[in-house]
Length: 220
Image 1 (cartoon, rainbow, N blue to C red):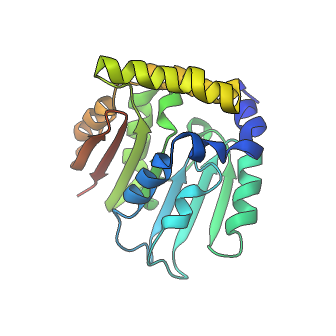
Image 2: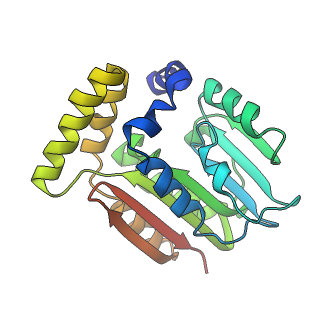
């Protein structure tokens, strides 16, 4: 078990605090991004770095043929996901690091990856994008949502104070660790460029509140 796995396993009982500390914005952008896909009926969906399955709440127009794979390395997160969605959706759960997983090429119609890419090391990002580009099938869509470092100085200072001081004081220092990953994550531009290099089309790439980016790409 690596440090991040242990961190998320220990954090899971209080993970709901993330929604409170983000003032509801993580949930808002999650819903916005998931619902970029209008129908999940008959789709093969990879929920990557799936956490407790927060994305699954917003999957719309699914049916009995909607096949979901939830991949995350935290056992505690998987237990919560199973308890919440096990009787509602057809979900195959895989507890493994993505880079050690063996998801077959062209096996998914939709890939969702929300709030997890900021923990990927820089040298692994091209590998990550290449793997996703192979996993996604023809006409398939990839949607990534992530916190990014604010470009405007006063906003950066406010976010730093809010997370490292206020959130840490109110909820615990473990939540303040988030800022380390935001601070080193400039944007999703590098992933976008790698997808373009791999002949995927960019549907949209937008920054919101100078803090969150949503990247939506498609294989033609």
